Amino acid sequence: MGNTFGHLFRITTFGESHGGGVGVVIDGCPPRLEISVEEIQAELNRRRPGQSKITTPRNEADQCEILSGMMDGKTTGTPIALLVRNKDQRSQDYDEMAVKYRPSHADATYDEKYGIRSWQGGGRSSARETIGRVAAGAIAKKILHQVAGVEIIGYVKRIKDLEGVVDPETVTLEQVESNIVRCPDSNAADRMIDLIEQVRKEGDSIGGVVECVARQVPKSLGMPVFDKLEADLAKGVMSLPASKGFEIGSGFAGTLLTGSEHNDEFYTDENGNIRTVTNRSGGVQGGISNGENIIIRVAFKPTATIRKEQNTVTNEGEAVTLAAKGRHDPCVLPRAVPMVEAMVALVLCDHLLRHQGQCGVL
Image (cartoon, rainbow, N blue to C red; front, side, top):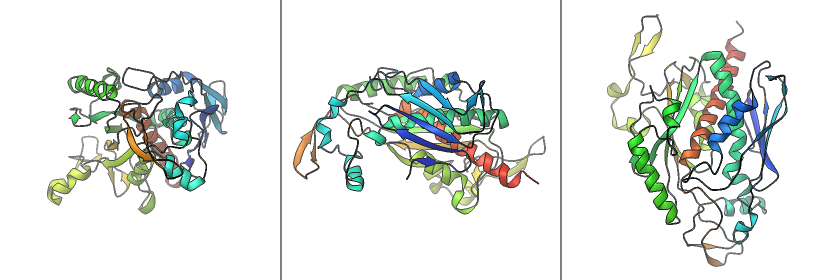
């Protein structure tokens, strides 16, 4: 019922923000992959709350437990279950939101659909659901790197109207992690941090854009028509909380060009490989990877839960105001970076296994 993603590399996330814990079951992971809890934890640490002054102060270590599917540091080919227990819930902060709908949040739509909702912390609509995705993404990243040398790096490209200058061809993880906003452009990063702090003090929130590059992606990933690679990438990242837009390659800017300006001309490199001179296609043509870097961008809206007073209604339709309590990110972008990376890794890993299953046997 919407909690499972993927075909051959298949994940199901579970748990609520203020329940006992959250996690993921991964089915279809190849056996004998060496992966440690420390490698998974490293990705979760990039996603966890309380990591800096510009994120939610909720104090969660997000320690990962491996419940099944591993033996002696290797995957067994059976379902892998990963669990992170919730430790620092403050459900009383949400008492008012049990009946008052947060503008632009999932409260009203969940009530309309199910007639019941886990209002403490937002339940399944909370960003804590993404813990399972990031944990599974760590395993997908390991498979992709081991099989094909794939490297996936996400970073904050823009916060509100402040945009960083970043070269996706050369950006490094060290540059991304060099500051708390995860923008490799240090000058832009300083201004972004100041803006987020200012907005946080005002009880408001802001959004922006995460860009992500996948390098060394094998050719031929993706299926024609409905399962095009960019279509699955779009579905993956657009399923993340607060995501509102997707671009690949030239994106919407490509609409300003003519065909002769936009087309990626082919050439043969010194190793006899067919390449493209430019990469406005973003590494995907006809729904299939062409071996060039895959470059996508994801737009994230401002966090819906804010301390500023707003007009809303109760679940009985009564007009009221709401100034939300609780601990919330004034800007989701810094913590969204590992989430975007994880979804890209999950899609690419799934399509790698699908390609090998169909085309790798003859």
